[in-house]
Image (cartoon, rainbow, N blue to C red; front, top):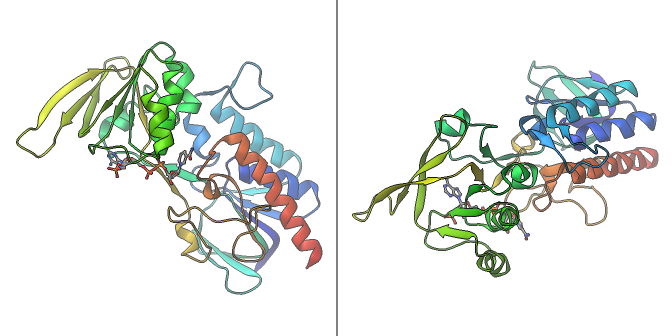
Length: 310
Ligand code: NDP
């Protein structure tokens, strides 16, 4: 069976950065890219908050640059999907979708997280044309415009507050009659005059000939008081949570209640020695490309040190 000192799983900023660092450190690592090479950033438009690009950079281009940089330093970047991994014995054994297996002394999990969507056909229809799951990434394109944020948790409140600094008006579409968010986040929303919360409201669909121009909503769905109405918006932001991509781990690493991998407070070490986690899969809080790249670097250095001590 093929053997590697470091198996990097995932190809977002965390995975590629880990590949660059491990390769330059002379550790023979293998990076398996997963089904969406480049990760979440490849589905956004211009990225203006990743330092080093004064005019911004297209998300796909940024990830392609990272991939190319990894390859240029000699990283072994491969397409494929890890479907299962056995972390109970050493070396660890990972199985790929084609059925082949690879042994690894250390593993860096950098599989990211996927934003949850409502499941409406219109979300796909208007993807990149008014539908977004990242206000920090895309909010800037809606300056002085009207947007809606779906969700009533901390993320939704945070995104609504962020957008309220840029947009003329922000609707929050909340399916219950209360916000689930912490009191502090609720307070932040309450302080913004241009945020209007639509409680007991669900989204039925989106409309617009040239990108999103509005949303079909329903209040008190399924009750005698049910009332359908439309709002005019330019942007529709999902903030109903993220799913960290950890299914293939089958519960072998400690996670928090939302499924994010728990790492040591100082390092990227997980509950299994020799396994490190980087990027959004272990980051419920920041979820930024630059933060993911930073933890990718840290995971590579942690793996390097672990291998040296082995
Ligand atoms: P949450 O799971 O906390 O909230 C999700 C929100 O989306 C809820 O209001 C939920 O409604 C709503 N929702 C879920 N599914 C649907 C649906 N199909 N249709 C309509 N609404 C839906 O996720 P968050 O991303 O907000 O937070 C995740 C974790 O990260 C939390 O622990 C949070 O505290 C933390 N976090 C902390 C931050 C901070 O401290 N600054 C910032 C961001 C996140 P309902 O309430 O009805 O279930």
